[in-house]
Image (cartoon, rainbow, N blue to C red):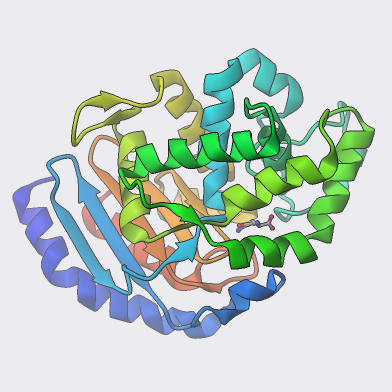
Length: 313
Ligand code: DON
């Protein structure tokens, strides 16, 4: 992007953000994980990072929130790094579902009975079970270390209140996991797998952390700030493809048409997005639409994409 565009973004982003913030009134904060209901509905923040270390931020970009489903992109990458493509895709498919993220319906209706993709809950629970490690604690520790490296932030940690809140109330995920266990997709005890899954969903970040993680994907697995190779290029390619086809759940087609960049949302209102070869972006806006995506966050990304012609398509 030209210096001119950067200057334009820096000048206009606060105004664009305030326009998008009006959309927060059209959604609701997630409450099925009780701890998430404490988030303020009118929050909206954004952080954009480029490869030269230049950053642009606006709104509530500093507030902490849990990664939730955004973490699924990176546990998939770690499972691929641990076991390779063949083993991972023996256990989880590569296709969008068109169903809600926590739906069980296709597990029973379509053979083989493996989850359709790694970004729906059933798929991500399966991926959690594939992370290498001698115990659930060991697996969780490896995930946390990997995320810290990608974010360039050794201080990343779990929000244990959110973890316990989901552990106590996540019976739909529990039922998905028992179904997968019954079908032989999960090998480990259900509660062990769920503790790994709920823990990576509860890793706490801010928009700057998300933008750094996204920047590594935008540069094919290399941290452009220090040249360190963190992820094999092929696995970034797989992750970015899933982000485009399934990253915004059953609104992924609409997002691809309106925004057109790889992105992944989480139910706490975070969105991680990237412009290949250019930017890593972190957004937070906990007011969600009916598909579980940030109403204002999607609106802001659409504005940015249109203003700067970011769409890949
Ligand atoms: O398993 C769950 O329901 C949450 N830990 C994550 C779901 C999520 O973020 C879906 N987001 N749109």
